[in-house]
Amino acid sequence: MIVRQHQQVFEVTTDLDFFMELYQLTDQIKAELSAFVKQLNGPRPLQALKDMETMRIKYPHTPQVVHVMMFGYMDMENNKKVDELRNFAIENFPNYIHTRLDKATEFMEQGNYKGALAILGEKLTIKHMYPDRNKFCYDEYMAFEREVIRYLVGIDNTDAAEDKLAKLADEFLGHRCFNEAVQIVREAEMKFFGNRSILQGQNSGKI
Image (cartoon, rainbow, N blue to C red):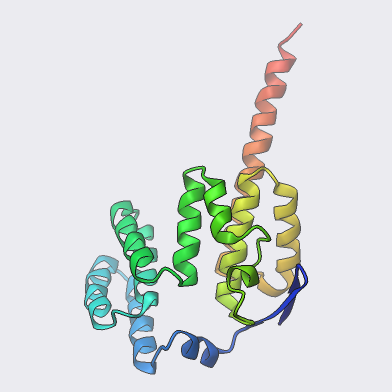
């Protein structure tokens, strides 16, 4: 898929070989990661995460291991462990896209949208975040767009967030990050209409 944004042209691909080469993932690492993801979705996710600690030591230069572990602890709502892994990733893999996006998310959760924008870039395009790259993985691109939508909603520009969702729908409908972006917009809209209903109720009581 060819994407054009702000006079920049780049490719978004589902090519697994490109992903493997980009992050120097061997078939062995991929197989072990896949096995752990299966375990995380099984009946003993905590044991899977403990086992992944061994994998993290075994492959110290593989940020995907840390990223998968973060998702596992997020699902368990273990925020202390999530923060620990996030800080580890920032220190050891500062240029990895999901590390940067996680930091942007953290800023937005704190209400620091200026800090998030410094990471996402003023033009809010993945190409401006990584100007030397002309090709991006499918998941990288959609994860970035999800955080842009989170940012737009956070600065009360829901219309722009909805426009972006509409443009992404044809290609990414059903993708996990797309579904999360939809949820971000829906929650903002529910909050807006809920607040408006409260205000209308208050106004209706006035003489």
